[in-house]
Every structure is written in C-alpha cells, then in structure tokens.
Image 1 (tube, helix red, strand yellow):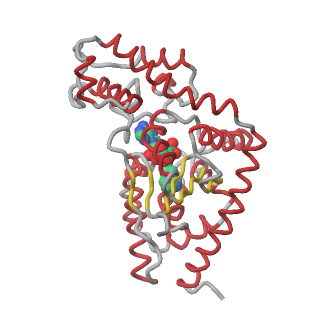
Image 2 (cartoon, helix red, strand yellow):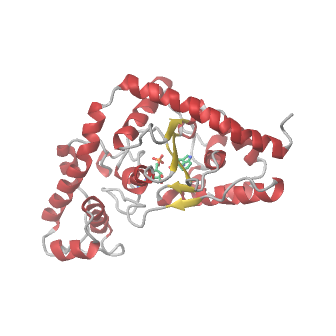
Image 3 (cartoon, protein in one colour):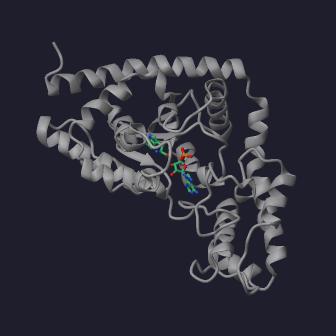
Length: 326
Ligand code: AMP
Ligand code: TRP
C-alpha cells in the first residue's frame, strides 16, 4: 500500500512559538512515522509583508533550523524552501484562473488586512499559493492550526473545481487539526491567538526560550477573576488556555488537572505549568544547540533538488491537462 502524502508549511517570520508547536508542529513530527511527509519553509508567503532582505535570508535558515530541532527530519521527510521550487508559483497562477474573487474576498485573514496600509496583491492571493503548495504534491492531509481552516477549505474547493474541469488529478486534502492546542491564546490577551507578530513579547513563549523566560512569561500571564482552576473558555479563558497547555505537555487529561489543581490557586498553578513547559521544551533547546549550520544548509539544498524533481513530474501532468504542454 502506498503511504498517504502529507504537506504543511510554516512562514519564516519571527520566532516559532507554543501555538505553532502545539497547533501544528507536534503533528508534523508525529506524522513522519507513518506518512510520506513534505514540509516547507514558505518564504514566498512571508514576503507578503515587507522583509529586510539580509535579515530575511538569515530568518529563513533560522526557521529551518528550529524546525529540525523540533523534530522535522530531512532524512525521512522532504524538507525545503518554497522559493527554491518555482513549480509552486506556476501552479498558483493556474489555480488563480479558476479562483473566484468573491471567495478570496471572504477570507477572514484577508478581511483583516485588506484596508490596512501595505495591503497588496500577494496578501490577497496568498490562499491560492497555499492551495498550490498543497496540491502540487497531491497531498491528502495537511496538519495545521485552526486559523488555517478556511484557507484549507479553498484548497479543497480548487481541487474539486480543477478535477471537474480538467480531469481527476488532485486528491481533496483533509485538514489535520488537533482536538486541543489548535488555537493557543496570547498570554496577555486570552481573547486573541498567540501570534508571531504581536508586538508584546510577553504574549508568547518561544520553543527556544530559556527556562527563566518561560517562568517569567507564565507568572505574568493574564488570568481571570476568581481563584479556582477550572476549564471554562467562557468564564475563564486565561486559565483554560493554561490548562490546555499543561494537558498537552504532561499528557494528563483535563478533568484530572482540574481535580488536582482546582483549589491550588493561580500562582501555584502557573508554576506547575511553567515547569511542565520548561521540561517539555528542553529537548528542543538541546537539539538546536547540537545542530550544525553548514550541515543544515546542505540538507536544505538536497531537499530543494529532490522537491524540484518530484514537483516537475507532477506539474507536467497539470500542464498537459490544461493544454500548456507541447
Ligand atoms: P505561521 O506561524 O502562520 O506560519 O503558522 C504555522 C502553523 O502554526 C500553522 O499551521 C498555524 O495554523 C499554526 N498556528 C499559528 N498560531 C497558532 C496558535 N496560536 N495556536 C495554534 N496553532 C497556531
Ligand atoms: N498559511 C499558512 C500559515 O500562515 C502557511 C502555509 C503556507 C501552509 N502554505 C501552506 C500551511 C500549505 C499548510 C499547507 O500558517
């Protein structure tokens, strides 16, 4: 039996945080045991907001390194930079010709950005490029956090539309969204998600943060009124966020966390969460320290060559179906 193909991407902007890790990357790593996995540093998506070229080059390599430290294994998975494989943008153009602008106008991420200064065509067509990433390799499953659900829905629609018009070519990809951790919230504002772009560094924990930083961030995390540790997103979003994080790092289920720490008080509970996070992230910090930059760059180059070869075979089929192959 052939193995299912999995694809996912992460933007190399800023630092990789607990939301990325619990929402998506833990699944990326776990899926490698069973599936044919393709993981991509989506640098073309990242330039939809202005980047300083020199810093961006370093950020791209840094993101690749952190992903390897988290457990993305270039020996088992295809791992490369999106910009180095031009088939992504070729397919995005073709898919753009069957994408309705009405559907793009409804993307919530676009609606949030449409009217702000610096808005551009790249931001608008961003979900089409993401669909192309996924469909290029005929991926059947896509591990992502909950914020990508709507974008994935577009990829599914475009697969079906293409198939109906040109012939059955693309599998319709399924999202893999974890039951818990799919939307890790900001430590400073539990009503908004933890994000790389929040100007307040206290809002997030990075996977490479040192133990003292992690302890400090959690101590200062915004909690709710009252003092009982109870899982209730309506009344207690701050504490619920921390309960979920603790559950994911310890494997304990939520009722047993409530039973154990219900009366402990917020301060004690935050300390417990901090120690679990410190311990859970320690292997990533160690792995990061041991990685060699030159070896990392070499592995990414090899990934590029493999990805180009594989993409070319698939993309030729698309050119033929559309009438673009001679
Ligand atoms: P990005 O940082 O936007 O490139 O996102 C990389 C992956 O992390 C995507 O699959 C996102 O859905 C996921 N992700 C980003 N922020 C969060 C969050 N706060 N909670 C859970 N998953 C997230
Ligand atoms: N848009 C995704 C994000 O910001 C990143 C991404 C780009 C992606 N291409 C993808 C995720 C393909 C999954 C599959 O998180």
